[in-house]
Structures are given as structure tokens and as C-alpha cells.
View (cartoon, rainbow, N blue to C red):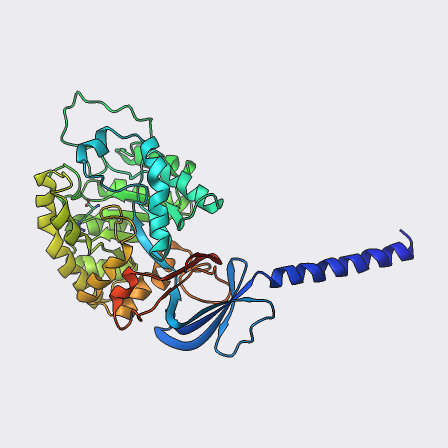
Length: 431
Ligand code: ARG
């Protein structure tokens, strides 16, 4: 290459990079936030400007000059906060009104066909990330991938694939004739017994796309086995599940209503206890020592007791709900007051998707302030999910997951049941 050619080439490179900077400038959005909830410090800031480029936040502050050519979103009359995170959903389905049809007349293909509707409802409700704790037929993985590819709209999903449970557990199908055999592929039921088999099940789930492992430490409500609190795995099995999960660099979440099962799962090293309904003082102490999060679905009792008989659920299940509902809320308050780490998780899919924000009211009735409840659904939830680098606050460097409400949720937390503005990764989905 001679000197003229070299000069021409470098000029071309300079011109190209100038052109690309100008092109990038067109992708800059400036959001004017009247009030901004700084969830990291528990404070409200006023008249903030958030600069978003592509999918990320690049600058936040009061005295920021808006770059020329930036498009402006005026939320100066709104309270702006980070996209909400629900740490416990079942986003691929919800009761149709026919209990037996849902169990016996639907395949994972039916579930897959409608799952995107629930994903959209969840996103429109201001929940830009969910941890999905149990689905059928790997539909959650397919949904997550389609959202990540930009094929459909929905929240960022951390998927658990199948619930791991023992024979006869909350994760198994109980109460039917032993002559009824389900033809589900090996691994896809999530039923596994014994140390070796549970390790293999963890490997299976991760092999097929799990971001997180969910297992049943105790019995449950919405299943037909006896008891809601009895442990359903031995200490050895729980230890095996959690250590295997950690070996693969993932976190484990334990479904646990029962007093003993909660303690066993905490000792095994789970990142979170789901439900935690019958936790006692010793369990609360253990959770504090281990830094275990409590993810408690304190709204659901309301919906189950008012709607589930109409939705065709057997009386046995509704009676189980009557045993735990009130205690769950009282024990939640004790855990909050003792300083257990709380992350927001609703078990969405027990109630209609898109209603994820209804739980804020119940959390503030049982020990939390609007600010701590919002932190549980943002900065703390991101910590539990291991995604603080990208989500959980409106901070430069994170993904632009941003929502807004007209009424400040610090004055009335129920305003989060009706979110007016939703941006996920720099794209506006609701305005
Ligand atoms: N998936 C949970 C279970 O079946 C739902 C519990 C709902 N009830 C409640 N009080 N949180 O066990």
C-alpha cells in the first residue's frame, strides 16, 4: 500500500467512525423523571434526567445536558422507578376454570401456544424480569429464548424448567388410580428420589436450559398429597440438590411451607425459601445466619379462597389453603421484623398474570414500608437472582428497565397495580 492509499484508508476509517457516532446519537433517549426512586439508597430524587443509549442507561442525574438529536420522553409528572422483578412466577400458565382439563386434557403444546400472552401481560404490568419457578415440557425455556431473540414481547426470564420433587410430592401427580400412567419422557416429570437421582435431575434440568433449580422441600397447597408442611426430601437429598446446583454455578430455590423443611433447606444452602408459611423463630434465625432470602406469596390466600372453588379446585386443596394462609402472613411479618432478607415473589399463575403488583399492598400490611417493599422487588430481587450488574436499579451501566406511575407508590403502593409506562432494555412497551 502506498502513502496515498494509506491516507485515504485512514480518512475513510475516521469518516466511518464519525458516521457511526452520529448514527448512535439517534439511538439516544433522554427520560425526564419528575421523581425517581433511588432504590439503592431508599431515597426519592427529583427532576432527574436518565440518558439511555441502545439498551442501557448511560447517565443519571439532575444536571445533565441532553445530547443533541436525542428523543425525549417526558415523565416529569410521574414517579419513575426500576423495572419490577417477580422472583416467583409460573408464567406459562394459569387456571382455565376447569381443573381436570388443565391436568388431563392439555399437553405442553397447548401451554406453549398461550404462554406468550401471559408474558406480555406481565411485562405490561411493569415486571421487566421474572424468575420462573416451574413449567411443563420446557415451555419456559422456549419462551425465554423467544423473548431474548426479540421474537415476542415479555420480561427477561430466568427459567427453572421442571420442579424437582420426590414420588408423591407436591411436584408429582397424586390422588389418581395407580393404573393411570402418564407417558412423559424421562426427566421431564422432575420426579426423582435418592441422592444420585436428584443429582441427575439437576444435571438434566441444566442441560436443557435451567438458569435456576427449584425443588420441593415440603408438601404444598395446590396438589392432592396429604399435609402442606411435611418434608418431602431427606436432608441428604436436599444437600445433594443444592451442592450439585452450585457445582454448575447456579442457585437453588426451595418450595417450603413446613417448619422443619424450611430449616433443612436453609441448612442445605438454598438461596431462597419460597412461601415460608410455617417458619418458626429458629427457622427465622437460621435464615438470617445463612443470608437466605424469603420469597413469600402473601397475596395468594386472598385469590384462592375467593376464586378457587369457582375454578373447580377440589375442596381438599381449598382446605389446605385455610391451614396456611393466615399463618403465612403472620410469620412473614415476624421474618420482616427480625431482618430476614425479603425478595418479591408472587407465584403468579396461581392468580391471573399481570396482577403481579397486587402483592405490594399485602407486604405493607404485614410489616414492610412502601420503600422496603419496592426494594424487595428491585434491588434485593436482583441480588437474589444474581443479576445486579444489569437490573434492579436505575444506574449507569445497567439495562434500561424503567417504569413509571402517576401516583407515587410511596404515598399509595397500590399505584403499582396499574403501571403507566414500561421500558425494557431501552424499548418502550407501554406509554
Ligand atoms: N404453589 C403454592 C402451593 O401450592 C401456592 C400456595 C398458595 N397459598 C399461599 N397461602 N401462599 O403450595
